[in-house]
Length: 328
Length: 312
Image (cartoon, rainbow over all chains, first blue to last red; front, side, top):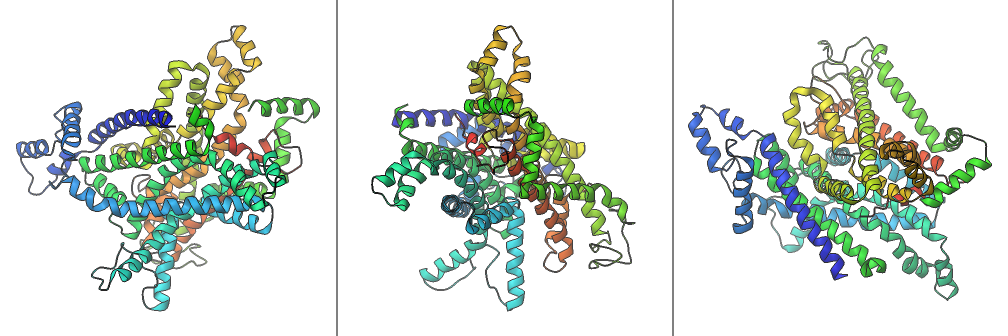
């Protein structure tokens, strides 16, 4: 198993290097920091613009490979992601925002995954009954609603509830109440309440996707002989379904987990912007509009690392569940 | 996969019914798929006939009616500029549908080309193409499209369609690759190869027809996905731009006012969800209808999903 995982890890490192170079080259050619500085009032002289661009390592008269070299040098040797277009350190911004995003991504993905697998397996066991049909209809509607629309609908619901009740029922902006007094308990409750709507808008999509796939893989397994054997040997149906059925039915899902994380990351960018979370996604949209190359690259790097980490976890999960992978 | 294709030929000998008619019959027998097809037909009708039903143009303002709720004169109300929301919505729906269809065709074509080449040729072609697919899968498509799209501002929405397609084909290509790998070992492909048929001809005549069920289903689902991506990107200002109107730009314009002026938001939102829902229902119905392991008439178990398993 370690051999297999080490090989996957090596492949991921190569992929990451190539991807980060491409992202850097693409971003620094597609965005125009020079135009950003030239549009300033009063208009700076060409030499001043050049000086500023060079100081930020954004000068388009330096070859891309050279700029990438400088940037990669800083990242690898000093763990320094460069400067934003405003001259502040990207690292500071990164450090501030990463936990905001991770909170949302972790809770949203784990919740969506667990609920989706449970709902799908349950639905398969009760195929064509009322609960299965209801769940199918719900997941179809959820699958047809883009994440940003779901987030907007939840937010509008919260606004409507606020207008009806006359005060905030569920908070829908930001990730904490500013200047909240009280002990740790109050703060945790406040965090949880603020997490509710953004997490729901991410997790519901995951729930729908996973439950559809889990239902079909579980249905493939339900008629299997080894399930009957397990029951004939004295296991209850529930135990046989969980120990022998679900375990086998989850294996094809592990690949899904990695892919779904791609979508989740995009979804988180929408959710953050809509609910006013100052996370990586919101930063990204802001940075693209400000021609802030280094910040965009930093978010891309974060996305790539998160996606590859999810892929690696999926590989590890696959290897843990499927003994054939370990010996291969 | 091999068992599936085998049964397909056996079934073909037993029943003289053609494959298309068989699938169409099964599709008509499924209530969900039938509903989906009817809803899709109505939406297309609305999108392309709708503009002629109302005297209002989508861009011309009516200064006597600003932010008016739905009425006999303005069926979906008017926006802050006095533009007719019904005219805008059908116009946006039209643009979104065209974008969805174009993206699906382009992306499925690209996926089958790359997937079939990687699977059929193997060796270095396979390694390079797989690496390319993995590389493109690392970045969420939204990030890349958002970075590139401001550069293409001048080239209009066709460039946006190409972008959406170029960052959408990778997962399908992986599935096609693994299906092609198992097809390559089959006798009829070997026979064609030994008879000296050129590789691309084999792919066209023998490989692609055998994965066509998957391609049709995938293209259907992609239409829905592309419409959703279009809406999301346009909502954040990275997709279709004014003066072009799409469901995404309408949602972006109406979202802020939704709590007070709901007609600016919910008609577009409702049509978007309805369209994608109908597409998904048809896709699901097609999956059952085209599944060769399903007995004719009986409701099929959804096994096509499990072929999505990738081998990397």
